[in-house]
Length: 143
Length: 441
Image 1 (tube, chains in turn cyan, orange):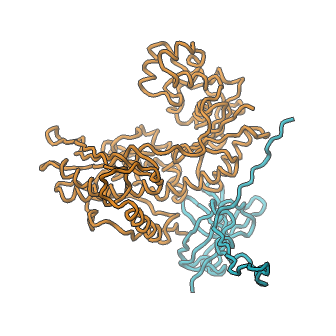
Image 2 (cartoon, chains in turn yellow, green; image 1 turned 135 degrees about the vertical axis):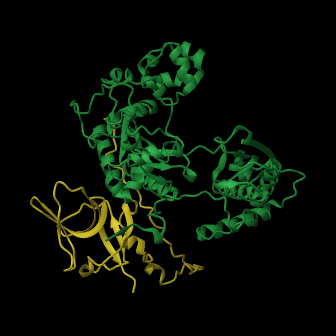
Image 3 (cartoon, chains in turn brown, purple; image 1 turned 45 degrees about the vertical axis):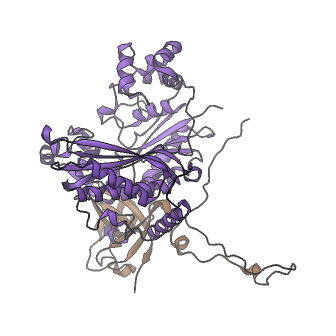
């Protein structure tokens, strides 16, 4: 029987990992005692972005999500490849406009909730053009 | 083992890129214009329905189209390049064998797959749609030529120009399939005769206008007729390329996947000016700037050029006596990618081409006779210090890679560059500039 490929896994080349160079020379077979403790450098790209191809940055305008820690001018990391689940903060396209809201997915009912008393929740009905654009995974807030 | 090719092709690529970030453009007639808002280079299905043809000059259709609610956008190449990269990288998750065929098309080899091909195609389509927001059509067949034909069938039936005849079998046998269900078509052996009979020879991959005319004169109207043609006769009339097309239609693979893009044969930088250029100084500046850009392109690919063609022209749409086109060919003493040398020769050529009294609207540079920069044939009387010039170029390119928005430029390119092309209706560069990210409320 022929061997066939079922799934192809792609190596992740999203970021460059700087390999620490061993500075300790090994003149007589006695290596630096620290060499075994070398670790990866910390990489914010890897920490914040799981799937670079599907990740986009978006800028916040307005204060409708303040209580979720999302402020005017903040940067959002948005992953389009994540399937939205109840209570996720998402970017949604509603009637042609992009908006950031908390999504509530319940039986027969889809709601976008703001995180600010001054804004009302919006129930999505069939007449509306609606699409979840992506799921917000991180907020980058400058102080 | 027989090969199976899939051609993945993004529908209305430029317009689709724009729609990802401006969902309000969905369902509306939208076109994207070429440099300087000259010609229509991408159209939404709605714009196609308005009868707007590919490549028409925008000013010719502008008034009527805008009455019909048409939205026209300038091209946003930074956005399209980034979205293209995302599309291709997404496809790499589905097979290690991929040939990027153009900015919005790729061939995949799916030969080693055990899964149902149509299902796999649907998964590719859905994943691309979710990850990048881009709608793609996928055609699957035994050869590249058949995959191209399958892709044609996969395109939405809503758009009649994709199809030569009406009767298109659907994937599930039902008539009016929805736009979303469409988009994946596998050309199976059992359906092949029926499909090929619907494809005019002019729509076969690699068959150009001249060949089409010749084929039709000889009585070949459809891909089916061509597939069953006498191969010896085809060889006499159309040579080996024609024979390959016939074999490919028969399901015999003649074109392998080109995973490494072939070495470039030429590099062109040519643009319409933002406004008419009348002085020799501005013409030289513009051409120097194109030469500099062409040199960058060469060095990116580690190539050097033996020949440079410089051309200048006025608009085609002016009075005959005000029309002018001329070109000048330079053969370098030794193949080069050294910016000062390219600029020097280009500016000299521009001076020779310039005639007073004309309003120039376009100029360009074509570099050809390309060779790898490491195998440049030396010239005994060469006056340029090649080692030194290469180090200079490496330094300049390294600086410009770090400061892409404030690059080092050559003085000959001018400072204000009033002739630069205008992109008056360009959307934001949503994915490549911190200050132009999409905004959400």
